[in-house]
Image 1 (cartoon, rainbow, N blue to C red):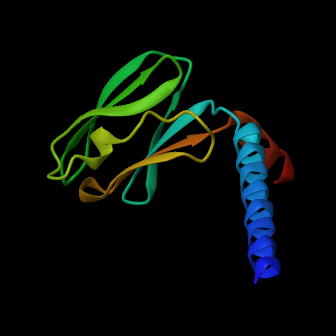
Image 2: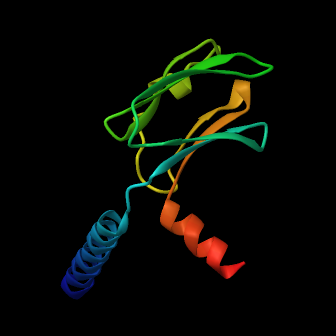
Image 3: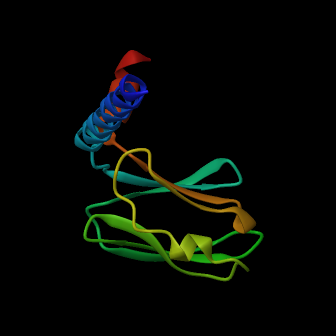
Length: 123
């Protein structure tokens, strides 16, 4: 019985160390984006640089959202959707992060110019 408990503790410790190492690696490899892409109903409608200060109103068939870019982060400050999840979302700035407003079919996605350039070169 003692061996089984000891082995379980060792296994749990190893799994915990692997999870912590994975988290640290993932956190260290995140890169900050350069562009906020605005996608409405699956179609990209505009792109904004993250190094600019901007406050703009995005109007869709379903409603209105206010997009803010400030200090290199993007967030939705106001929305007339019923749940307001997009307004409650934390600001985003890393490549691949998104803010989604499902009622308005709106997605804000962070991208990198570097990725764009490498895709253009491959084409």
